[in-house]
Length: 292
Image (cartoon, rainbow, N blue to C red; front, top):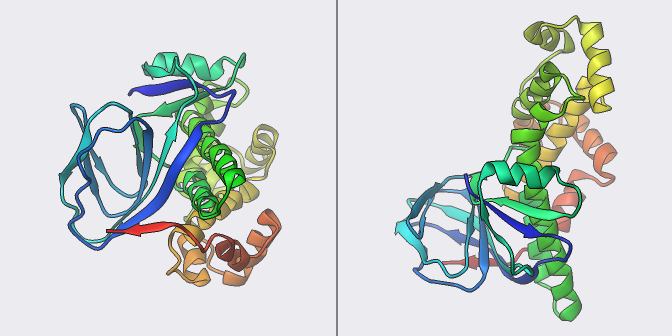
């Protein structure tokens, strides 16, 4: 896996962003650009090639395209396709591609902030990246120089979130000596199985703990009870669903994140986010789209 490593002490320079939707047979144009492009697929399959590397991007997958490198679609899409995209410049002449070992070392070096961006990968179900993408698109609709500056900071926040999410999921949980391996495994399991009906007793049996001891240990390591940690994962996923799939009703969103009671889901959402699920969806209802 290759990573783009760049200084993050200054925001990137935002150029443009959008949400492409296509009903069938979309083929990405062949081109060479002087900016970076970040793509996050939400529906359908996008077939791409950049340089000598080929990619098959399905929902949840992302891709970072590099300036000066020819990229193009290799196969028309079949059926509906939708993906977020943004173009930006990095304000760092020393930015470059590196391997995973160097990327991990840079992440743990706190002497200065860095963007550490995988060339491609999969967003977790509770990733905040697409939520931040929707916020970026909302800002991009506004006019004026101040909006452009806001977009640059919003784009930077999105890239830093990707940096943090990816390394937390793939590296930090297992490397943090303060968190026992079993608890790190449980945290990851809860993030992946947020839609499963589980009990503390059942989880304790699955991971080989006494329920009371597990409850105490998990709270000490994470700061949350197991139930609260699980519910927070569910609300994070729900936020993604609310902004990326407007056709889903609140009841359907609730079911998809593993909460069978819609009213309970709405109470949880208001408790954790400070606004109702409906208000959250409406806050980002307007998005810049391009349909081809």
